[in-house]
Length: 97
Image 1: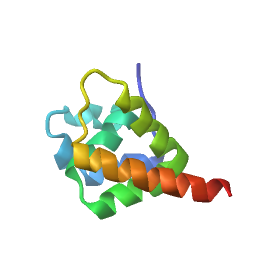
Image 2: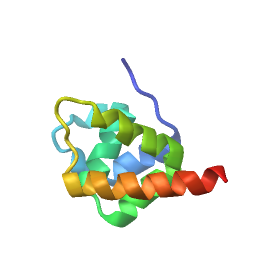
Image 3: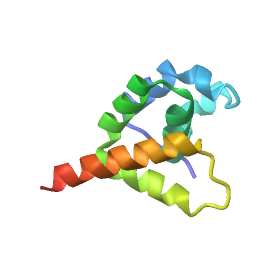
Image 4: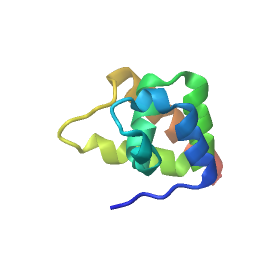
């Protein structure tokens, strides 16, 4: 399945391509949003994470994290998962009021 991203996400991937060293250059723009989110949260800095959340939205970011919870192998660092689950849950509630 081929993933297509908007130009903003493609530029973001290009700017952070060193984090995807294991992915062939020609396939980096096709990585899934889940993998992009997981990699940036785990290995990027806080500004990178917040920038990505702003690009894809709080609600969608929270759904990505919640989908990961049920996976047999959780690839998020526990402290990263906990922090961003709390952060996104709190901000998602603010956005619905």
